[in-house]
Length: 267
Image 1: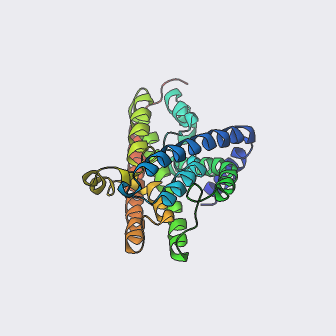
Image 2 (image 1 turned 90 degrees about the vertical axis):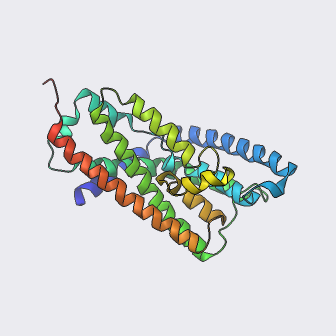
């Protein structure tokens, strides 16, 4: 465990060096966040009673999504990992007396956390001072705040576990481009990053709420805004745990299968 924590720490510190890129990301996320808020505001002004989420809850959803985009954006892959697989350099990793799954999992978490730390605070501070209902509101109560914190951690673990399945799948293909494209587009829509899941038809919500993608950024952000409360919040957290266990188990199985069958050409 110590070696993975050390690797996590080194990767996290390395990620904090890219401050210029972080400020560019903050500017982009501000622009995108204001655009979404104003777009939804136009619809709310037309017919506020027809929307499934309170406007304040929706605004909190949008700003938190932008603030923690680096944590949950499933399209933000580490190209170095894919390159190491296609080039054969992954052989050096496989020779080490460590689990490549655990090492890459720690690396993925550190990469996402370092990017989120640099970006989240300016966005949250500005959004907190915006007038209601356009800014970030406070959680409904202490229980909601605690559930949000737990769901955030579990959501990050689930996103990383999903990413590991994609990385491991790249061992079975000549090019990972197709896997990356399908995984990114599918997960972005189904996790509510493009359109919050409550705005989809009821029949679709019933199915999507049980899928692992809804347990990523959708779960913690809706818990924070009060759209998921009480026993529903605890059930949502339980579902997150179930999907984490499933994804990690499948990922570890793929790792063991890869070690038995992988062939690296060259020397």
